[in-house]
Image 1 (cartoon, rainbow, N blue to C red):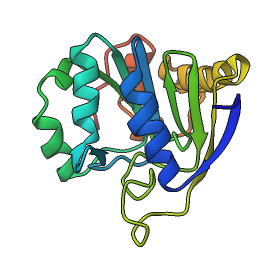
Image 2: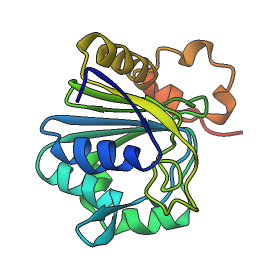
Image 3: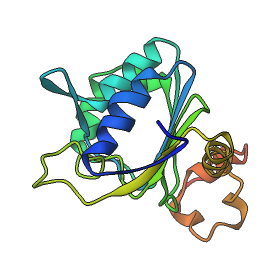
Image 4: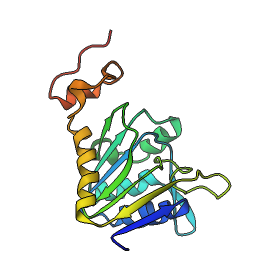
Amino acid sequence: MDAIEFVTDAQLCERVLQTAVPQARSFVWLATADLKDLHVPRGRRMIPFLGVLAELVASGVAVRLLHAREPGPLFRRDFDRYPNLLDGLERVLCPRVHFKSVVVDGSFAYSGSANLTGAGMGAKSPARRNFEAGWLTTTPALVGQVMEQFDAVWRGQHCERCGRRQFCTEHELLLGRQPRPAG
């Protein structure tokens, strides 16, 4: 891969979800606004992307997921099939997250328009996928910038000044406090 490469549609699934993520050795960070029961090709069949993440967790790879809203029932059904994700998948829900990015081992990054869904990541048929675009990079400075954006939200840097705190239970945890009771 060149240091920076523009990718679209099915290339997103091929280059990010089928190639980069499964090769992770240390960590994977995933950021998305929308999260659905994404399936990816493995050989001649489709498997839940959560299965790929479960395999990574089982091999000692740290997986973080930053997302804007709770996923639907199909995602939850797939999630329940992989019990090691319950403790092995770290996640933070932040209603202001709209950026989409993937970082693998601090040496590869994707940033673009695609949510972590089949239609977004190009894992659906051409007639059912979204028109998406983004870039891949191995340039250390760019990977670092993607990581900093992710990590700033992850560590709660914006929580004190966030105008959506009433919709978020994570901010208290990110700031090291016990969540306040709702109401």
